[in-house]
Amino acid sequence: MKVFLAEQLQKANRAVASDNRRLLAAHGVTAINIIGGPGAGKTTLLEKTLERLAGRVKVGVIEGDIYTTRDAERLDRPGVEVIQINTRGACHLDANMVGQVLGELALPDLDLLFIENVGNLVCPAEFDLGEDCKVAVLSVAEGGDKPAKYPLVFHEATAAVLTKSDLLPYTDFRPEQVTEEILGINPELDMFLLSARSGEGIDRWCDWLERQLARKGFAIA
Amino acid sequence: MKVFLAEQLQKANRAVASDNRRLLAAHGVTAINIIGGPGAGKTTLLEKTLERLAGRVKVGVIEGDIYTTRDAERLDRPGVEVIQINTRGACHLDANMVGQVLGELALPDLDLLFIENVGNLVCPAEFDLGEDCKVAVLSVAEGGDKPAKYPLVFHEATAAVLTKSDLLPYTDFRPEQVTEEILGINPELDMFLLSARSGEGIDRWCDWLERQLARKGFAIA
Image (cartoon, rainbow over all chains, first blue to last red):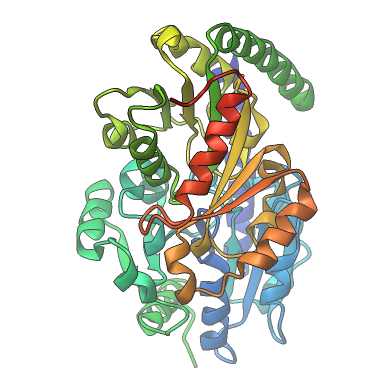
């Protein structure tokens, strides 16, 4: 009975996700679902990314948080449309939540939509939101055993970003070994090691984003 | 309908949690439910704690992980009973999962039972397992905004442990400010700042554990 309900919910979610995907495609918007645990550095990565893309790519952000609007406030800046979803207890975004706010965004004016999920490395990976791709975010301070312990998000993602590389000297995180482990789960993943604080690796990440946009025919000015 | 089901599940969970609590109390076992996001440092804290308590307190561990037995292997050592629960996708432990393995532990021989929950700062806080208290674990590398963003676990906990204090010089985490914010959510919380790596603050944490044991009449040799 419980499994049945879970399957029904997933089926309903997939249907709404397909609607979201069609709507985004109709407006040529590339949507990226950012997933990682609390404190993985998702918002800081977006802050840095918005700086780099400013004036060249029209970006919108849907911020998923349980209660607060703190992350949305951090990303709110001229030229960027930010919408907050407060899940009020729910540990992940679902397609319905995203579908309800898509109409609030000026989609014809957007090239790229980031959807920052609730800080949780587990449940968000199970829910299709209608995005073009998922990006898994893991901080080097979280430890190298995380991919094996939370494989689903890496299995579902198109790219994995290892953040806070500035902390590498103070941890026992081995980026080569962790990369190998992640590629063992999903050999197709594009891998990034970067620090939003120092700026290391941010260019490569932004180049990758632009290649994702190019797939929908967007040419960077 | 969805809310109804959630309430029914919670009611059923509370009933099993009460059974677990009675069974643990009957054997004079103090049970502590450790909750934190992925990479908060829960297992490393337990490794250090087991070292300190070795020979004085008889400790058991229930390890909650989605798939792997890595954490259980890290904690497995002479004199410590470790049981792994693999949730196979579920993002938290529930009372039923814990109840099913309690019978596998030699409860009459135990003083203290750690239950390390799945790495998730959200969902585990909602499920009573029958523990005596919950401990919230947050790494200083996760950032100081986490208590406000994930308040439930701090609201439900008896103690909060800020881990990886050795990384403080390399982050913008302000322990006094975060402590104030946590106590704003729950003024009754006992607060700890420690590093399992350097050993800073571990004594105070172990003293606190012994006081929890003393409440059940246990006298440290």
